[in-house]
Length: 373
Image 1 (cartoon, rainbow, N blue to C red):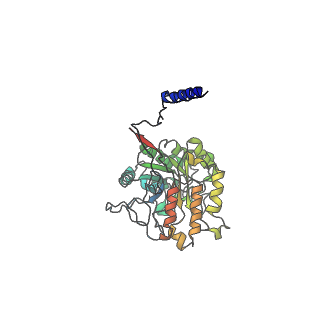
Image 2: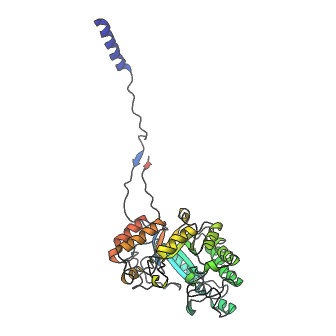
Image 3: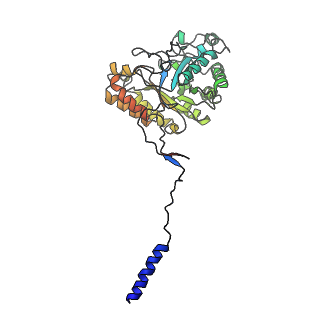
């Protein structure tokens, strides 16, 4: 019995000696180096997102006080080589809004040189250019081109004109789509797909091209004006003002179109005169759903603009940090890509809120792993 036990133990030991040891095989080859970067929490100046300069470029002086300029040719500042912006974030987008009259001062005579210089300057400052050609603003100096005014006559009291939409010309006049739309088509023919052109606002009626009264357009007029953009810009993104259900949905039925809103932060600017109505509490939450735009951020940029300026928020409207946090959170809920603060200073006491906002605005890619031999 003892002999048998010894033989069994000896045999087992021998088996252990002769069975080869299985080598652990690595899933990563020996000659491959794997790096796992650590995620950072910095503000990233990625293309096509974040704050933008307005009628200015990186390195330019900001607007003073609560005022701003728009609609006119750019007043170029002397550049000293410093791209930083005092009391304002660094940006990758420059926004230029200009009236039609300056781009086509004579019928068929296009001032492409104005746009070419803006594109070249943006590129030299590390930016791309976001563009709006507004058909008109308010007052004689912001009217349609003089040659078009001579053509259609001095009449400005249209059936739909009122202090809100401020139509300067009749958009139902077929000549409006022919000539303003014709300019937009010429613009697209020359600049669609330009590498320094970030996007183009789809601007058709209303003061400053903001679209007021668009719901009153007949369908033929609406389609003719919208088509001048959607037919002409198939490479450069289009961004339509949040106007009305018919106009926004029609534009999106042609090609993917982003959207913009121009009064972020209105918690009651005109509430006393409008029975408590505001953009932030009433118009935007309702119209985003009504126009079926809640998922457009998945395929197109969304560009928002401040109502007034940060200084007006603080000094005239009396906003506090909680108000600013609410406004910021609403824009993030709506998936903001970029923000026009009108090149007006960010108050020091809100700089930390803006910094956190920038970290969550637009897109942010995190690299978890890369390898090389």
